[in-house]
Image (cartoon, rainbow, N blue to C red; front, side):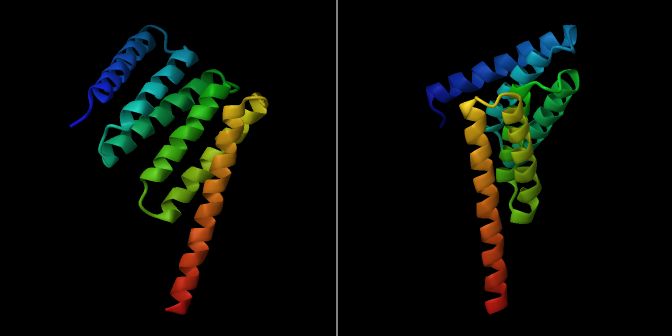
Length: 150
């Protein structure tokens, strides 16, 4: 059973999605609205089954790409796109499937840092995504060694 605060959070982000959807209907070129919508979608995806969460994240990625087509230097959208790619990577069940998402995440975090170099959150996100790739590479190397030994 979900706690009251989790249900409140779920309701809040559902409402945020509805508001963003209505705003989008009247102003589809509002990149800030698209980015807010994605933030709510990514939060809601945490309450879903893996397949439904993956669908929501793909929808979020699509909306972020749309926001970036409107404003290619929108650093918060680039950062959110890195988060979406990372979230999707963690929902995959194989390292080789996760790698491209971690690589894309690192690229988007780097672009966000390039646009706003003093943003500590962007810098930390880039550092963590790079570390995830290193851990993944090490795990893949260990699996190869295990296969050679056996």
